Image (cartoon, rainbow, N blue to C red):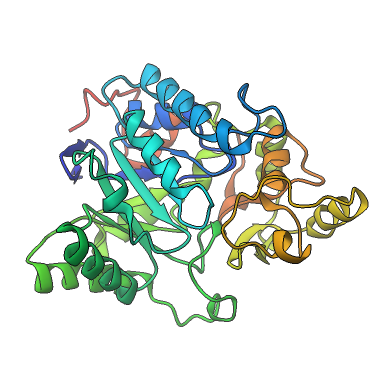
Amino acid sequence: MKSLTIGKYMIPFPLIQGGMGVRISGGSLAGHVARCGGVGLVATAGIGLNSPHYDGKNFFTADPMALKDEIRKAYEIAPDGVVGTNCMVAVTNFDEMVRASCEAGAKVIVSGAGLPMNLPELTADWPEVALVPIVSSVKAAELIARKWKKGYGRLPDAVVVEDPDTAGGHLGEKLENIGTGQYDQYATVRGVKDYFREKWQLDIPVIAAGGIWDRSDLLHALEQGADGVQVASRFVCTEECDASDAFKQAYLDCSAEDIGLIMSPAGLPGRAIKGNIEQIRQRDLDLEITCPSGCLKKCAYKAGQERFCIVHALDRAQRGDTETGLIFCGTNAWKADRMTTVQEVFNELFAIEGKQSRDQAV
């Protein structure tokens, strides 16, 4: 199986660990994925919550400091690994978190939940940082490429193509278009590759995200033209994942029927374990919670108390409150049947016999 090169970085195994907030993929998970030979991503959204820097009022001050802590933690685990961040365009402090990522030594920035049109400008002082937008259509990839080339003389180092029919968390598609059977992820993967080859004479990696659980999913993605995969939910039930034990147990306990779509106050659909959505909403109503952080650029809860405060709902779940906490997941989360380790996941996905470090990977 081929390695993956993104920008100047060679990744032994063609795998990016998906960014999962709030603090589901922190420094521990990202570091261990990088140590095993993949790209480990720290999710930046709300990273300051549940950190020593947060005093209940200083959300925007705590976020970048906590992010730098987590990136340092990841590099302590994988000093020579490829550690990066996932930065959501939809968050208020997107620009600051991108810069903080670079300052802390992130080698890759993966960005979605909107089109990261100004990402090259934000990273101009760190040209070695690889930039990887997340899209769900060829059109979105074209828009980003044209803007980046015209405005900044730069093109993406890789592109993640996310399948809204299977991926977890916030999804880049209209709610009514998800699950109709009309979306063809691998036609999109091939279309994005063809676009960069034909328009820009550039052969960049295109990564398939969403629904990748086991080796057969990985092999299918590669056979269909992807250069690598992004895997998120599969890593939740590992010892190294930064989520609480209760969060991991929710994955172990859920069925396929428990997983479904919600509307995020960010104005995007999301996929989650949906059974407690009314309890999440009722908690904020009972406590008369107003917007506590202003974390999103656009938010139905901030504007008119619609739905619930999502960043704090995600934070509660990460800490272990699975009754009023929001648990994002992909469609295959129900397949989790035991606790495992990051190394064991790599062993299964890449048919590695026994333990193998990134230094041994071919």
